[in-house]
Length: 390
Image 1: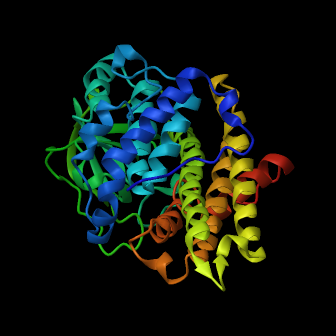
Image 2: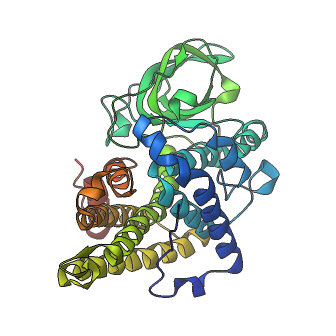
């Protein structure tokens, strides 16, 4: 039974609007109803709960900030963040499905797509009728996406796409993929590749210790004919996919707090019930130290993301500010997961509790959408003006 109660040590709820709290609570109810009862089983079996995709569409988790005219609910970015926080409280892999759909597929189509592309794809992505994926990372190009070798050549009314992308969430089940590739002049452009196009395959990645309830795979293009009508016309260059990553990183910064909250709530509850040496372990100094540090770091992260959400709503949030929040909050969450696991002792490694699953998932979250170290260098570049990447 999911008995989670969210920590709010600084009474942050008082800063949220009624709409924010309604959206947050509705998402939490859905997680408790549809995710928590099944997620341990799916994670143990390394299976993706595909049936949840339609449900996620029904409760508005796909493209929350997309306007209603294109099928989205038209919410603000704080609402989006709160939704991702609640979903990742359930599982990072399920939140990854939402993040990819919203920030990496729907966002670029909305921001850079033609009107025809928006009308054709966004409503179906919003409802979950279509599941999308995002192709940027390649076997030899991760932190350096500008070095990509996936490319396409002009062939009249279509282009011929060749190459491969890897570590792609949703790939095995996706109906469409927003793929970034170089044209013959070496300029990066976005293309909407659709399931069923000849030469387009999505082999699944197996043997993962992390994000086991998330579907991960490759996007392989072998002379795929892509209509020119599927090329995103609004923006090109490396800045286009990086702007999508900004949106995803924003959601991750909120989502990681959810994982941390769940680990803290589990450890706090367990510490009050577990008796050793004649009293609950919550009464011992070292356990109180762990819990006090957890709630302090969660509270700091909550305040960081709330202010970032305000800036995002005002279109003033910089890439570097988003990068800082992603790096800080995921690092915070993974440390809390490890401390919480210790507090539960041997029980902490079992599927009877969520902590070990969160810990393993966060090992991926700390790497994807920009690694922990890369985000450190982004902040370093922003404050010094000196580029340490090259």
